[in-house]
Length: 164
Image (cartoon, rainbow, N blue to C red; front, side, top):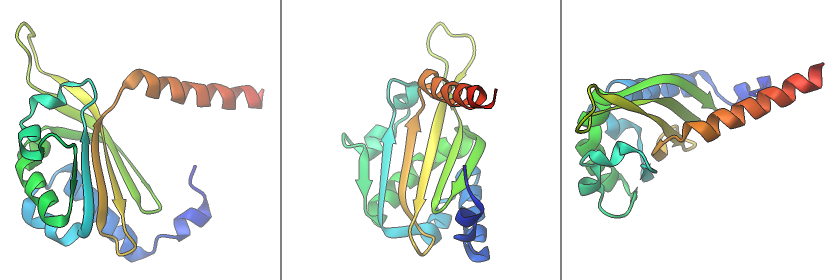
């Protein structure tokens, strides 16, 4: 849980910048916007896990290594995946703490043969900011919901058992 002291780390400029970055991540995947927000030493990673995220053409763009480093390389990858993310990523929750931003959401997937309608995969988009408020770490990962829900329930149950 974030305390008042943690919130004091952010000044008005930091909060405005974080809000701009969240807006960029939620809807405005315009490549020209990225120049303003990326640090020179940025690292991007994509972790599809066992999900269908690999149906996208990202791995042709990224290559066999799920990590991409350096501003120019990351810009190239973001340019290649921005159409999919801009139209198919639906962020349902955002968490901002210190210099970290986490968006939880869904990525719309094409139906596979035999499926009647499209489905979505739960994903997390993590962004770590440097001291200047620029993005130095980004990660897009599929979420395994069962372990996440179990962890949340464990915390909720342990908190409830301490009260009564």
